[in-house]
Length: 305
Image (tube, rainbow, N blue to C red; front, side, top):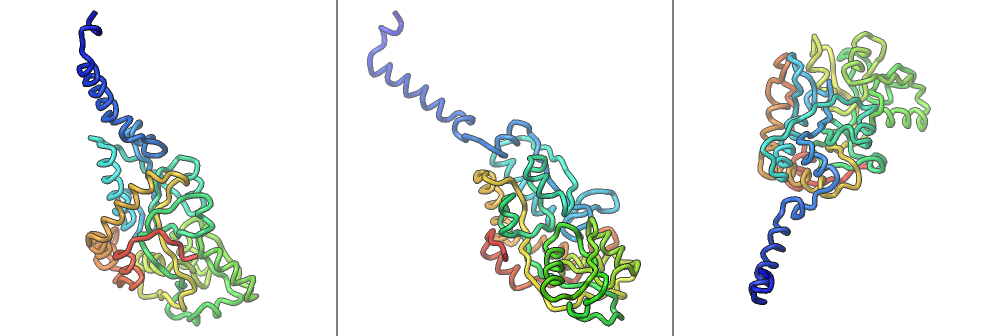
């Protein structure tokens, strides 16, 4: 009876109202999928961090995760929280290493990893990378009084690097192509690599230049060490996430682009590379490179190799 008492225009108006209500429903309007849906439903985001990648992602003396990359990642978390219109977003911090970081991202344990991970075309087969957050070059760390000034001087010597890194691959390729007969020692992380160098079990530590400065800053006597050698390759660091999730990558990239182009990234850089940092209050005095300044001006996710 009620239905028949309505005029055609009235029935049309009611139907239109119902359709509009359905379209405006958050679940349908956002059409969430993948990582964004996972985070929305759980109210938790799993962040991968490093334990000793100074000054990017590491523990301070209170076992809190701090660093340049960690700050950049937390800016992304704020953007995700706003995108999903969440009143609260809990953070689950998961320590990762050079050896397991890609596996933990690919299998869903970690939603986003920001540390000192180099974006390469080979790694893109397993994971996706955000806009780059840093640019560095590969050099070597040795004792200041050693007779090692460049990579050719490493021939026949014990050399340490961190397992699962592009530096390890570079050293092994150098050994193969140049017949340098180096004994390459693969450490589990940068901290262990420096301990091997410091103990005299290796003549040099090969890694991204900025990470070498970080290890030197932590040393008991920083003046005993020197970063030397011509840069062998350039590395673009990015935040890792699972492949084939364009909606999540779009939010992450947009957040990082805002931080870079607004000038906030330069302030974060200054805090971690040009001012005293925990735990020992040492200053890396690391100048911003031309390549990094250009990245801040024009954010992109391009790999150097």
